[in-house]
Image 1: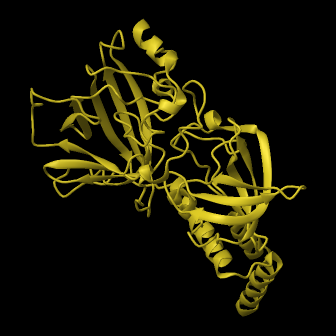
Image 2: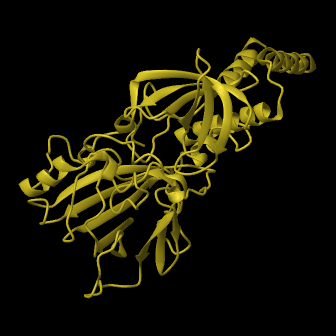
Image 3: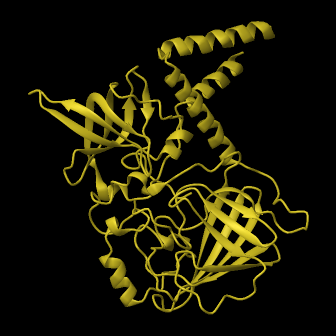
Length: 136
Length: 261
């Protein structure tokens, strides 16, 4: 029984294991892994597009000023292979994004994880930071 | 006892689901998808078995593969201790290259021998072998198996003109007629229209396809050199759509010299 239970829990832990992703462009030339950002706000648009899926979030600062951030995910094929679908995010969802900001100061971020409206934290397909690319 | 175990397992699963406090359909779908991904990952790690053969005895190379060419830096495929025989003029071109200009980042083809970090499929017919690429771009290569000579009026193209033949169990693909636009890798190794590649594909076993490719380009390299890369079979995988040009926003924000990802 102990063996069966440990098999079960091994299976459960695999649910959160994800494959590292590499993109078709150099992450480190566009985003700065040393500029981590945490953005909380309302989704204004979700683009299930190539080469990257993107969503846009209205983030309100302490003065009430709203900034619309453009957040980059992996490509839809990589996301799909890791459990995403085009229906996982919806306009109006309040979410939290952890990622890296663009080097050039644009209000853009490469998302590392996304915490969905229901509290679930999901892989976002980041290609940089601690998710180092590998040669297949 | 077995029934008792089953009940206990169901209770444990339900308990875990309750603890995770995620009840939406999307969350359930995400979990199912992540489980599929994990299962696929496990299958990927160890596809074992002998090299399959076609009815005519030729090696069967068909399947969905990952890798098999340079991605970040072509020099990692060199034999240990060897350096790339790059000419000074080509070295200058490489040093001046900017990451934002990488054709791959601009949704253009990889050329040869570069490979995109996405799955690709080999289709074998008696007259042609096709490489279908899922990514970057959603494109294909064709290798003519019943043509023994390249035409002498080739115009420069991204994938050139490829003719193939078998040497024992190795598929040998000879390609000329390239343009000089693609880069060999993220770090920007260049080439000229004089490029001639000879790829030697050997399926070592069910899950392993070795590509030993000789690069001969007197316009950019002082002598031919050979690099070796290994593709892994992705059992159960299917190609998906990847139309890179759809919403490309990165290149205008990419900064600095050509570099690894």
